[in-house]
Length: 382
Ligand code: ADP
Ligand code: MG
Image 1 (spheres, rainbow, N blue to C red):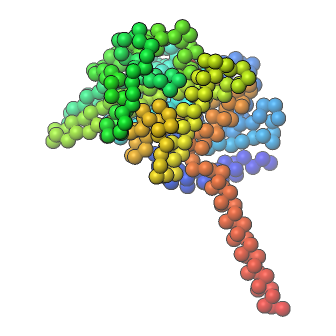
Image 2: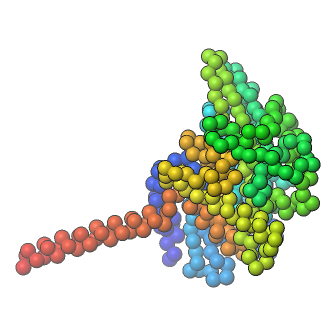
Image 3: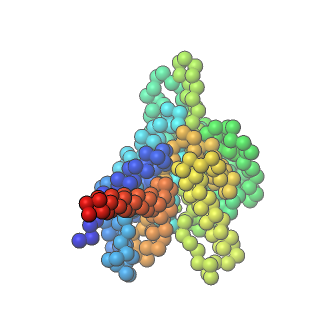
């Protein structure tokens, strides 16, 4: 009765059309499993075609909304399955592409789980960060014709200030880094003096990631709070040189974004309010940049936040972008879930809603023309 299949099909046709237009921006949606078995879900349906249907758990039926993405990973999806879908993108780094992967979503929706894995997790639960580096090392050793050099940077952006997480200077509470003024250093973070560490093996990477996390924690008494209120960027720089002497340079940015939840203005004051304002601003700037890129605008507003400024040379051009939109299934998360899905949909398509409206209006125009023709035909018969 609801015509779900028909609605999905229509949505998908439009989506595929728009997908052609928008090039290198991909969106995967991941739904975290419920943490309490008794919780009521706001997610009604997950299609294996990349669609997800949600409904307001209070108002129910007539609030159903369908969203379409490149992929939707349901609550039972494993880390391996997620990585398998991400792998082609990661591998393209070895062919000289710049790639940015963002984990977006409210705090507690599973961003860190996707990127890093559960803390102290078993190797099978490692997230994309580790699996990607492991993969890049495997490719680099398997190719006799190209010599690769892999290096890593790790920074955090908190309240629009950048901090180097690999620097030994843990006592510094200052954020000494100023972004480059130009984006001539293609693929590099636009940070002239963030430490770059050479890595030779996956275990080097694990050590560095742990060091980064330690530095991140030492700067704050409430590590959990801080990590959900800041963006962290793990950058992998890959230089390749083949036997003919051709060189390639590319980068992979793995970004665990600050929680996207709206902070209640009446409750947040002082530091909390400031953090919330910085996060809102930088996430909406990220959305603006992605939209401007998708619409091939001549002006891309990179300058409006540190995040987009740092990643400027890896967003746009022939760089590839993937956003993981994380949602929590619980009923009480419904408002945030909807807002995440809307952000992701906006990033993933050039205004699906508008395109839909245009389609309808052109159909109506055609029908009007048909009516006019028939009227004329009738009139000429009389
Ligand atoms: P975020 O980084 O978005 O704040 P976390 O990654 O810390 O969220 O996830 C919140 C909690 O949910 C953690 O306890 C985490 O282990 C768990 N969790 C998240 N995603 C999954 C998943 N796909 N499978 C199992 N547990 C998960
Ligand atoms: Mg997190």
